[in-house]
Image (cartoon, rainbow, N blue to C red; front, side):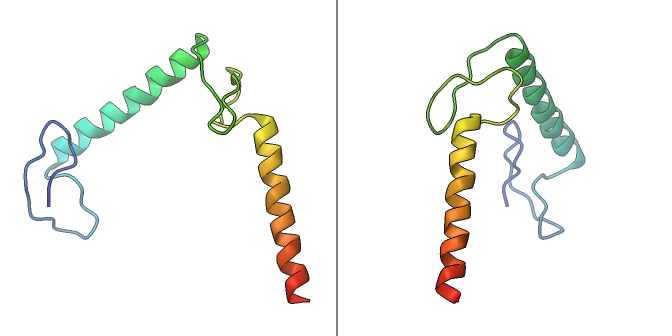
Length: 92
């Protein structure tokens, strides 16, 4: 198996079925990198960096924690309700 740490990427024998890193140091480095990426992403959002809805591309509010705008989210939930009702009607 290959270590998931981008800087290390050396081959190792995993001791458990879900081991991703060759050692504790690689795990710590990768975890800290992931935490800092999220920190700077949130900081950019608070400073007004442009974010677009993944479905329609409209600009998202800095207070919207989701990657989808409210109107697309509403359309998605309506489609889910229609699918559920359709399945219920098929059963009965």
